[in-house]
Image (cartoon, rainbow, N blue to C red; front, side, top):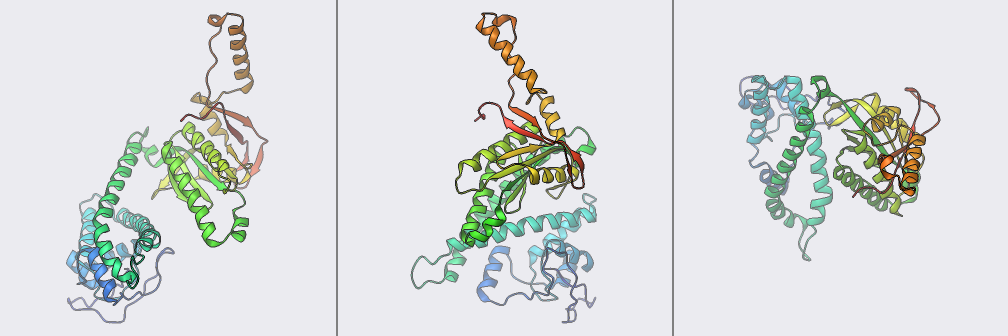
Length: 394
């Protein structure tokens, strides 16, 4: 609910002609008057826990915050312009007071508080849209002929709201604990921001052609199945799903072995599903900058480029990733030496000299060097084809 900065300065409502502010690309860029629909107002009061009481100017003044700062906070949260309509509640005042209080106490700088508002707004906006479009829309189908969806919505929201709120806070605390644990284990202060990670892209092959052939509903089901399978596999094997882009997912892991396992399991899972197109994965290992839950930098760009040149149903990795696998003992430095060690052990066992020859190392992955090639914007790289050695662990 981004607001204009116009105020009379004397405690009365400002002029009725609001000024419209420019807004970032992800926000509404027009003045949005609050709805007067009675049910919508009742639902709003139920969800927010209080009734409309303040204009934006009054809310800022009550919170003890300048109109300029209040406007920037609301704009960062992604709220539409409402001019100076009386549409804000005690909850809006409290939110302003809390954010401003964190700045005043020196716990957050003003730019950081803006960033907190923006990241929270973007994340929860997507969640709310999904819940309304997919979750509530299905549940509010009238159970009996003659009933309207409106008659069902209010009692349903009334029942669901406290449960969903508690669940949201629980998941957020769990994720915050996990993220905090990863940060405090960083080797040094610089690594807390610029960290060494394995970053991978998994991309459905031929998705553009599919969009021309499949109906919208079928395409939506395919994308949802792909995203669900990817999210489950990434989480189950110790990685983090950074974001989904329809036909592509971006994931990260703290070590190369974890990322390699995730990538191969993704390829294997999609290959077993006859309704899914082929999958290709590209992974790079190196320094990554993290911001607002996303990852940036040359390592991410390289992973994206490797994905675009990877064969179908295959995983392509960069040289740094291959070196990391050999360093940790997850892959042999030389396939020739690994094969020779295995043959020596086999002969020793056959001839009864098992004690004379140590057992060969057990490797999770195999690496096959590919032809060096130029990669746009990154120079010449030498990709490696990642494969599994033996059966996957359960």
